[in-house]
Image (cartoon, rainbow, N blue to C red; front, side, top):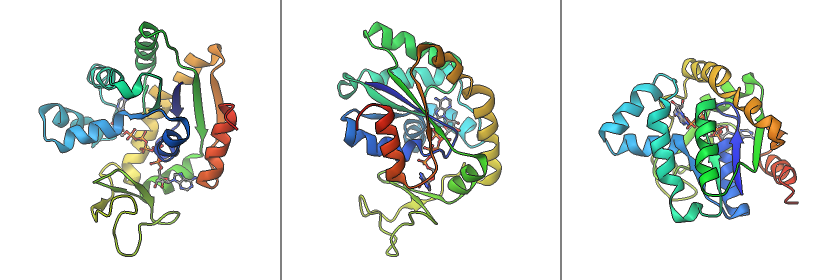
Length: 216
Ligand code: AP5
């Protein structure tokens, strides 16, 4: 199954993707996580990503597409994948359709998480992330343990992302509205788009997604 988890910054794409990996047995492909890993390596490509990401702007398509195509070729994505934060532009959606088509596949589902902008700002500003394993926390809804150790890997490197300020979130939301939202109209004619309420308990939202996928 090839599934796009779609939604604005902070909609819960990463949170749900990590749970769905277990439930569906296919990997999460997050272009944002891949770019942060490249940045952490200190490579020239990582520095190019940083230039855009720290401003809350989209990274140019040509840089994203090469990274994405290389990841999709890995054996664990042979039976499908959960696309988190990709595609971000209609051109990226066209490229994804072409890459999948060559593999005899197509986008089977687009799950569009619906979250109002006020909740997005609160979620993003309160987010903390484990630098070691990527586990996500929220200072109000799911705080890290008092010991400061990550529940998944024990690391104490739990930080706020540099683009998780209120100012940057608003820029990211504008980029979403202008460039990413039109992707829904790209996929709607093929009947694969399901709108899912993204507010409420994390496990309730997972249940709604699985229902939309016909999995429970
Ligand atoms: P990326 O890393 O993809 O960020 P994003 O799309 O802005 O999404 P987020 O990771 O911020 O949010 P999310 O929906 O995953 O929410 P989460 O589950 O963490 O991209 C970052 C940057 O990289 C972009 O700005 C761009 O520069 C670049 N980039 C990446 N991909 C690109 C591409 N394809 N093309 C061009 N540029 C690209 O949840 C958020 C918070 O809410 C967490 O704290 C979580 O604990 C909490 N939360 C989750 N669910 C709930 C709930 N039900 N109730 C309460 N709190 C909740």
